[in-house]
Amino acid sequence: MRARLMVVAVIINAVAALVSGAVIILKARTATQVETAASLAVAEPLVAETLQVLQDAPVSGLFPILDLRFRSVRHVRVSLLDAAGAPVVTGDEARRRSGEVKRRAPAWFARMIAPPVQRHEVPLVLRGTRIGTALVTTEPGDEIDEIWGYALALGLTGAALSLAMLATLYLAFGRLLSPLARLADGLTRLEKQDYSPRLDRPDTRELAVIAARFNRLAEALEAARAANRDLNRRLLTAQDDERRRTALELHDEFGPCLFALEANSSSIARIGATLDEPARGRLRQRTDDIAAIVRRVQVINRGLLSRLRPAGLGQAPLAQCLDLLLRDLARHNPGVTIEGRFAPLRRGYGDLVDLTVYRCVQEGVTNALRHARAAAIRVEVAEAADGTRLDLSVSDDGIGLAPEPALGHGLPGMRERVAALGGRLAIAGAAAGTVLSVAIPIEPPDAGEAAA
Image (cartoon, rainbow, N blue to C red):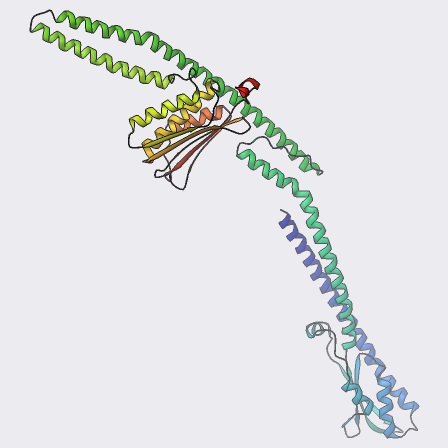
């Protein structure tokens, strides 16, 4: 905007300069024409007066005197001709021509200013006899030089004033428009979901209104995000509580029922062993089928329990639970090296944070195993130096990100869980492979935890 305003100011200055130049040229042309016409009108009376005064002078001395008298006449050039029409050049005139001063005004300016050339012949009559002719030609060079000097001084002064004005406008526009730059930076941060920026009140009333409304918008967005985050946290808490209750019911109710089915199947098999063939064989086959179904349901039940609530989470230290998770994944994928590095972590950070970290590690490693075709996977979890953030990364040496990766339910689910805790999740390609980065804010440790 400042550049556009400066361009407008430059255009206005240029138009003003052109108009001023046109007015100067028109006025100068008129003034030059008047001056040369006046000088031309003075020439003939001057000749007559000189001849009247010098009626008794010899002819040979008349021409130098006339040349001397014509020097005082500006804006005309007088050439003296004898009675035969030949030019008469006096010594003074020759010296004057040889030492003629070069004109200061450039040719293009002289062409615009100079009026049409006029010539006038004045007969030289001495004692009733014509002794020659004075050829008077308009010569506006002196007037044009003066006008050029005035125009040059005026132009330089105007240019200096214009430059000073442009510099002042540049600084003034920069000061006036600097709130807009801060507003643009604030809007960029809002676009990146950073609602913390606030704008100072500018001196300009209109910009002050915009800044005040921006601040109210940022406050409203920050309040809405806080409310949304609190709602998501409550929703996650409710979901995790429901999953915990469901897992507890599966473990406490479904598990014993399966164990009872398995025990009854074994009891029926022992009773069937006392029967005669072929009833014994048919009964043993049925009890074996029941036992296989029970074992299958037990495997499914353990998987459901693991997905609903990882075993040991909340009872064992978080680092130990993550280490067990990586060992189990490595056991099921023997061709991939899975390494975990867990800096000294607290025993736990609360159910929501612990479960979110566990799920992010689980989903990140699973995605790398399924899609990255990696040979090595590295997991790191560490606290920030100030103890207010938990940093997690899952990196692999696989094929990297696809140009348009297909999103399933895992990554969006992780992103929602992390966002509900006020954290950030990012996935990007590295020099070789992919890196999943998660940052989750945590409460700093109290004195007791720090001492432990």
